Image (cartoon, rainbow over all chains, first blue to last red; front, side, top):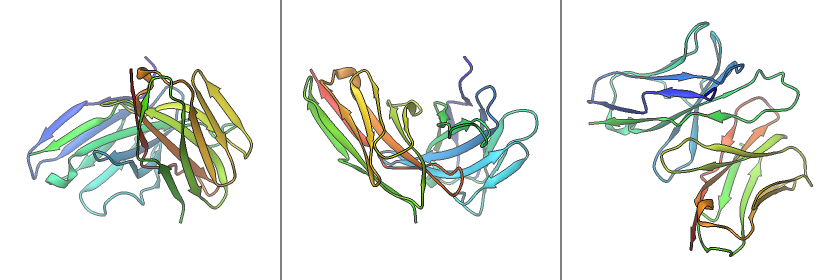
Amino acid sequence: NAGVMQNPRHLVRRRGQEARLRCSPMKGHSHVYWYRQLPEEGLKFMVYLQKENIIDESGMPKERFSAEFPKEGPSILRIQQVVRGDSAAYFCASSPPANSPRNSPLHFGNGTRLTVT
Amino acid sequence: EDQVTQSPEALRLQEGESSSLNCSYTVSGLRGLFWYRQDPGKGPEFLFTLYSAGEEKEKERLKATLTKKESFLHITAPKPEDSATYLCAVLPDSWGKFQFGAGTQVVVTP
């Protein structure tokens, strides 16, 4: 399956712990997006990255949240010192390079559901 | 500020009862409008891309249309398997930040 792979599917953390969410984009895709979704709500943009570069992180909380997409390996969304309000589904999506002939859609993984106890 | 508004929030249909979902948008130039389907516990699944006013796309019982201010997703003679949340997203001219609406939850009963 060459789709977007996210792991883990479910993650339980106690308040104050760190959460690391991983995303491997589709083959040939060089751009990664992270979105957050609360129950009954839409997808809220968090960050947009390409390899070794953060293009836009305007949706990321200023503290405790960080994201990276290294030259090798998956993209990582890291949440330090988690709080109950961080409980949500976190989705990763990927797309081809921005200079593709037409503007390609995002392709999503099945998400990581984070529960903070 | 770019905005995407979907209506209704929820829609309950009898099998075979056709209906339409609306996605209104305000963006400073539109590079593309995208429709997705999302099932519970899954990520959004891509359905259609529309690029310019007047464009239409079809897939089985779904048909998407686009004007300068809104898009419609028409569901013709729906079946229970069409039950899902339907999301629309816009990609503005500025650069690649896709912005999503809150979705329409569709339930089709036999």
